[in-house]
Length: 208
Image (cartoon, rainbow, N blue to C red; front, side, top):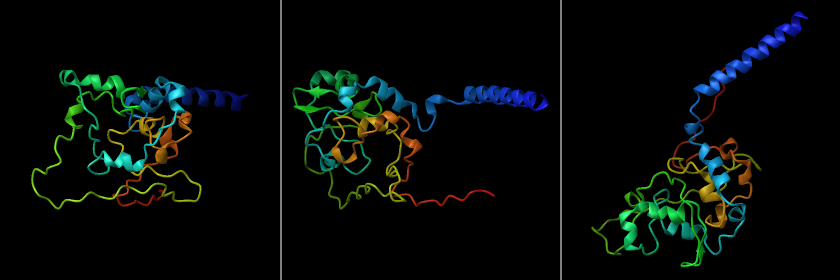
């Protein structure tokens, strides 16, 4: 009987302790704003999740960027009425969908809460350089790079502004080379850990 009472007390302590711990955790910033992934999955129609991306590939993906990781340029004309309210960009890029005008599926932004789109995304108005330069872009990160055969590949880029994995890796807006078919699992970073290619790997040493 004594052992049983002790067990009940221990369980009660763990339960109340867990509630206190949960209350102290900021879920909006848990696992690099991991909550975004679940919210995006719930808000995205299942038919969009399984649609095909057409002929877009990884070369097209990088062609819109000055260097890997930079904001993509705006590859289409922007109606002058949009200049007064940048949130109009989100009418297409918040949840995606098929564009009759372009005959393609619209890529989804991973950060719709940042509505000052033109602060980072710009149209190309001229091919002329402002000043001569010998600057060259860096090579894009290699895909895969699993540390063990069959293990989940690491995330080769930083998570800043790209916390919502679903927006780029699921649905017809995603290019075929980086599309996944198991977005319903939700917590991507439970298996895929960030390992930025330009950052030296750090060896994990378990404390004695």
